[in-house]
Every structure is written in structure tokens, then in C-alpha cells.
Length: 615
Ligand code: F6R
Image (cartoon, rainbow, N blue to C red; front, side):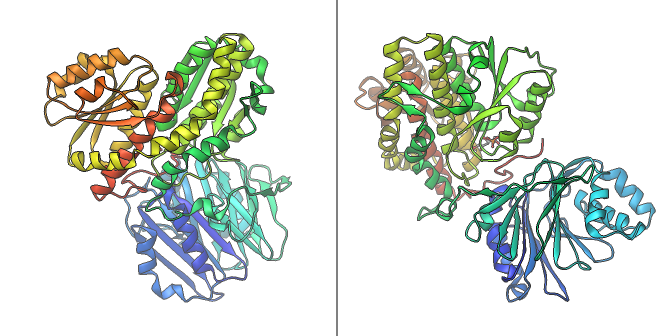
């Protein structure tokens, strides 16, 4: 969490840093700060609140001609969000300035030691300890800033992506990473540093992603040198050509990123299967799977690890893998898996799912699975992310940047990738009939058109949202493949509208949640024609007898549920196994409209951040 930006070059730094922070605000938005250096004076401004509040507060800095600057947008870990705890933090001498994404776990003993040595602290943060530790190391042995950073980092335990500026070395910024992402944009006579490449996409398409335990001194008119923090050895910089473009990270006329991303789904699902799914030839090919096909085919078990929405995609995949491949599947919250001494066999295949590729719990679970000898396959969206590098092999989802904090297109593209893997294995194992295999390929190919059709439920979703926007609770029910969709629908509603919502397997309702149903309770039931339709109809009847308000997602042309439900949303027909790709669309739209009508900040819901790099 937290976003960091740095610039050093010939352009005015203020607008670059502010614009960069706005693009990184998805990473944290409870406070923000900026530092500029114009060759004489340090200009620092920081505030509780969003980057727009920072702009308001920093008017005096806006006209600065400084060509070196750094900025930070925060998601609080140590110390409440307030002006003082906001970054940048300055060392006691006033010379060193730091911005930091991550956590210094051993900051307390370090702080005690520094206090004994006469240092004072104004904030409650671990970051202020780090900048003073660097200062102390630097002073003790009269070191240059780069060396001091290196020595200090070898004393800390935790995670960091940092930028450190020293007034005595005003033509450089020292950067380092361990566990939090850090990209360096390499332009002509200028460098950019950021948590991801979005802040510098319009200036350069050349980026270097630092690996864990690496640092660099970003220096004007000097080639970039990357070193290992531990042993000082030099690393060859690997300059990547960025795939992202400016249009992808702007709202493109939509009121919110979330809505834009919901509407992008037909296209991004196509991007996900492009070149991998050749329906007419009856072929599925994904390099990461082909290269490791024996591992998959000999798997006695597939273990899926993920968090949040990605975990829900994993649950959908459990149904698909077991049905198509007959390989037993277990789906685990990464945060539980990593702390429970799990049993992992050599012939288990572990699939880790993550949009950001930076989720700390998922990353730690992957490391644990690898230690225990498992082969780990990643399904990630962000190219070059920590998880994509840590896994043994993987497949990208190609959804493009997802900026709205609530995950939408990541979910459907993850399911698309996982479905393709299951189909590829089913073909090799002969666990699906030839005709079913070909039918699924054809159906998957036309899913984008059906998603497009499902998006036409927008007006209906809005009309229903108007009726239920003031609800204080909501129940989501689904069976089989659509049980995880019920969980995902409930998560979407609670995280952006702050209405309490729960997802349940429809049949499980009578074992407890039915007690909640009265005439005030909206119940969203996912009831497509395929699957366990008759059973779901019975569940709907049970709700109706208790006066619950039924909102049903049904297949176009449905008559039975239409007669029972208070509201219906009609979606196009597809097979049961692929239906989550369609049924999830109206639920995303419903949550979106309810949140907008309640005046919530849809793209940046309270207390959340897009990538959860702390456990
Ligand atoms: C919900 C949401 C989160 C993420 C979770 C995992 O809308 O976005 O629940 O799904 O934090 O994130 P990734 O997929 O980046 O590992």
C-alpha cells in the first residue's frame, strides 16, 4: 500500500509528482505529501486527505521551478492518518528526506537506540525511524548517502520501496526495494521513480523494475547502476518496453474507473484469450501451461491460493477444474494457508491468483508452497509484479490496469484464464468428451458478446438500485458455479456502498440466514436456467413465503422466477460452467449504482487500498 513517485531531470517536478500521485492514489489515499528541491531550499507540504487536498495546501509550491521532487500517497499502517504522520519524513539534521511504501518491523528497537543517541521524533511512523537511522549511519562514518542507505537497510527487517534525497547530493535520489514494488522510468536526461509505471507513461516507455534486495542511485547525466543491498554486487539493469498506454489509465469519459472497467470486460476477456483460444481449430495453448504440462497432468491435487475477489475466482475455478479435469481442488485464503503448516505434496500443483501480483499474504503463501517443494503457477494481471516473478510459471490475464479499488475485470479475466487451463488439461486427460470440449471452446469465444449483452442490464440495475439504496443488509444466494458469484456480489456491495451483505449457497440459507429474512431484506438470487434451476426456484419460494424482497438474475425469457421475484434482471444464456462470466455483470452494476446513489467514493472506498502489500 502507499504510492511513491520521484522525478529528477529538466522538467518542473511539481506537476509530474502531483499527477503521478493521482494515478497512484488507488494504492492509498488517507494522506499525501510532496517534497521539491530548487537547488537552495527544500519545499515540503503534506496533509491528511487526498492528493486534491494536498494540491489545495501546496499552492505556494505549485509555481516552483524545482526539477527534483518526490511525493507520497499513504495508506496508514503505523500512526493514524494525520499531517504529521504523512510522508515525506525529514531527518533530524533537516538534510535527508524519505518517502516509503512498506513496513519496518523492527522500528521499535531501532527507535529506542536512536533516542539514546539523541535523536528526536515527531511522528508515530516507522519511516521517520528509517530516515534517522540512515542519517546516523551516514554521520558516524562520514559516508555518502548511497552507502549509508545500504548499510541502514541491512539493519532493518520488513518491507520497503523507498526514495531518499540528500540536500548535500542534490543531483541524485537513492532508491531501494524489498517486498514493495518500484519502477524506474528511464528518459533522455531524466529519471522517474514510482510504485508502478503509470506516473511516467507519457514521458518514457522504458522502465526498469527493481528486484527485491536491490538499490540504485538515480543520478543526473550518469548511467544507472543497480546493486544488491546485501553484498554490493552490481546487477545488469534490464530495461523493459512498457505495454501500458495513457488511455488505459484514464477514465475515458466514464464517471468512475470502476464503471469504465466494468464496461471494458467484453474487450479484455477477448484480450485474455486472444492467441490462446483457437476455437475453430479446437486448440488451447498457453505457453506457461504447455511448458509445464507434465506437472499439471500428474497433479494429484490442485491447491488454489488467493485473497478477496481473486479467491472468489479461485472458487469458481474449483468447480470448473473438478468438473472438467477430475483433479481434486482445494481453495485457500492465502492468509490462512501461510500460517497453518499446510500439507503439500511434491505432486501438488499450486495456483496463485492475484490481480496486482503484490498481495503480501499471497506472496508469502507462494514462498511457503515453493519451500515445501510444490510447483507454483501464477495467474496475475500486472506484468512484472512480484508474484509473477516469484511463481515457477504463469499466465497473465491481460486485463490492462485495474484502477478502481473494487475488482471487476480482474475477476472475469481470471476466470477466463482458469477456464482455459482446465479445458487444456481436460483435453489432454480425456476427461471431457470431444464434443463437450469443442462446445466449451465455441461458447468461450462468444462470451465477450454475451458480456456486452449483459451490460445492457445497466438501466435495470440502476432502477433496482434506486429501490434498495437505503437497505442496511442484503443477502446474495447462488448454487454451484454461481455460489462464488453470490460471494463476489456481496463483497462488491459491502466494499463500495458500506451496506452489510452476505453471500451464501442458496440451499444453506435454511440453516441460519433464513432467520434474517423479513419484508425489509433484499435477497439477490442468481438463478440462470442452466444448473440447479429447480432447486433455486424452491429457495426463492422459501424467501417469498417470508416476505423477503427478491431480486433475481435470470436467463432471458424466464417465466417461472419472473412470477415469484419482485425484480428480475435478464441475462443471455450460456452453459452452467461459463455462467459466472455473465451473472457477475449485473451484480457489479447493481453495487456500482447503489454506491453512487449513496454518495460513496466508488473508486476509493474508505479504509481500502488496491494492492494490499501488508499482511
Ligand atoms: C475486492 C478486491 C480485493 C482483492 C484482494 C486481492 O474488490 O479488490 O478483495 O481482490 O485484495 O488482491 P489481488 O488480486 O491483487 O491479490
